[in-house]
Image 1 (cartoon, helix red, strand yellow):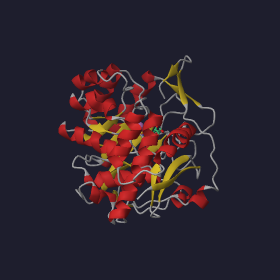
Image 2 (image 1 turned 90 degrees about the vertical axis):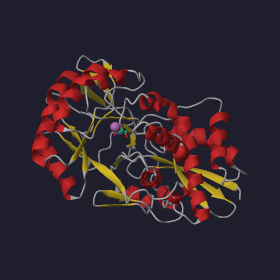
Image 3 (image 1 turned 30 degrees about the vertical axis):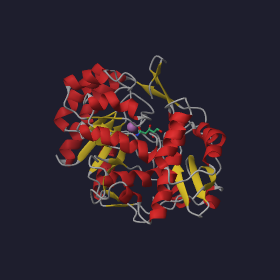
Length: 402
Ligand code: EZ4
Ligand code: CO
């Protein structure tokens, strides 16, 4: 079998997605997600100019060799653009391998380890009343875990709070919108939100919170400590993770579990955090961490150190990425939780898929391959619309992490 074509498809059914479709001489095709939120066209150019010409004529069965060829062969290693491009190729090749074998991809990864992937949803609210209502809606729909983001008194446009859209979509303008931040106001407010949530929903609902890289290690340590009575499943991205030894300081002060990794793109980004047991959940994804092949490598390292998976699943992970994620989720021994923001009806129609939500779980598709495709004709009706993530400023105007 040979690869005869590889198409890079850009579509915006409510938000932008970049998808690679690999075509073979046998007629079997495979798909991979290559979306990097706010930087989509950089991956498009990387794929079209530098990757697609190398794929034509290659044997699609050689997944590992193709991964090594694109990674080592580029000379320039790592980085989100390179690794999303490699991820798209890798994911599409696993899809093809499954279809050739007549097996769903999770069977090729060792088979089923669990009934389904436990998911958590996003409950957001300006006020505590709104938050309690939102969380109750998730509980009513069977969710066992909910991430809670809250408005902060005195602050406008806080991370996680939508501007009147049913699905939280942070990349909302071609030129980044500006949000405001105050660590003091945030730290003074958040513990009271989780106190009320525990009061209302009791001890067994799993609660999560995303700090979105906004604190310093000692500030994160204080927050983790103050949240201890409310037993969070995890505190996400407490600090920016470039300085990984900063997590030692957080760890010395609090038993609140820590989750990190949605912006990581290789095992080297998480190596220290995992091997020093500084985190509890690793949130790398198929699309941003080099595909199924490399993410499996990260999860296998994590398993040795009591670290469980908690893959990023915001709206910018396309249904192609989500399909691949669920195959890994049901197969690996150290699955933790899967984030699941869901997609708009338009997005679901452009990407017909076999995975489905039921009673708190995502269930994997039993179709051969990934069980997801892109309707290219429909995709063409939604042209690319530039959309960037916001920036964040302190009250005095200094730029802060968003
Ligand atoms: O900011 O998906 O946990 N989820 C998140 C997301 C990310 C966006 C980045 O593209 O933090 O909202
Ligand atoms: Co996050």
